[in-house]
Length: 102
Image (cartoon, rainbow, N blue to C red):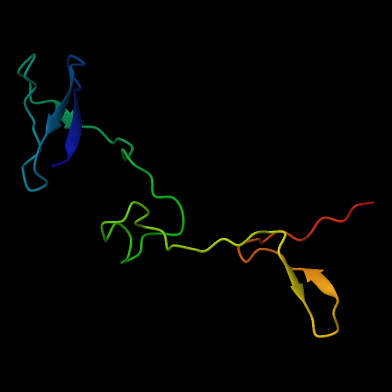
């Protein structure tokens, strides 16, 4: 159930009230008794950031639930080509370009 902030326009009394969405708003101030108790506009208590949630998030019993398991390879791994020369391959998760030494 959401928590609504109320404030009396007559005496300034403020109170947070836990109510159902379907409940009628309160109108009478519990402090002074006048019918000037108004619901306040407040900011949400949470923010949604990032790319979103997926069906696989928070499922399963593994400790790393929510993120797919990725095998990380050594960033200094080398591979040999058919001509005998070797080259250094970037790790599969690297998204940065290789830095050049000047």
